[in-house]
Image 1 (tube, rainbow, N blue to C red):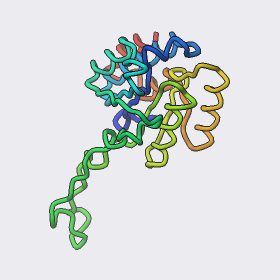
Image 2 (spheres, rainbow, N blue to C red):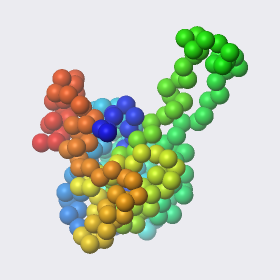
Image 3 (spheres, rainbow, N blue to C red):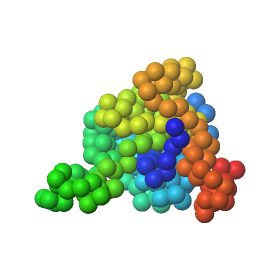
Image 4 (cartoon, rainbow, N blue to C red):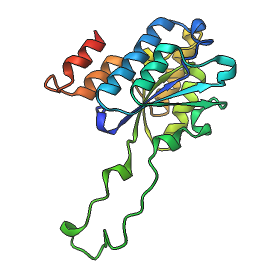
Length: 207
């Protein structure tokens, strides 16, 4: 099973100015978060951000917030550790639209039945990264799994204050059904082929 850019959304969790200085490998983590957002923008993958208790922890670091906004994304201010508890899944799912009466009647032959609009199903694959891996990132990802999204955690764009906590989060997420990937895995799976029109642009971001 490979990632599909057309079915993906990117969520960047809590890369905040008062948190990131204490995070293990923070410079690499921030750089990969920015790469993910720019790749998503290039490939027209929706991008969302979150910020935990921003009055205390501040906004997301400028480079991450700028990348979210450049991709047309919004940032959810939250107080729960899981962003789902503060409404993230409502952002990720489009409003349910009713099929017009008679538009898909079971009595019609299958070749005459109208297929449901693609937008109704929405994008069910969530590519997620953030901090701290063992708290807000993990709780958000586990809740998204409970909401029946497919969850792909970008490990080299996640971290915690300690390596031990980060790795424990990855073990638990994998055990609960999340896929663990890296930034480059996401890039090349979203592209699928060197013939993709955006291949050179995405390759430049990876390099």
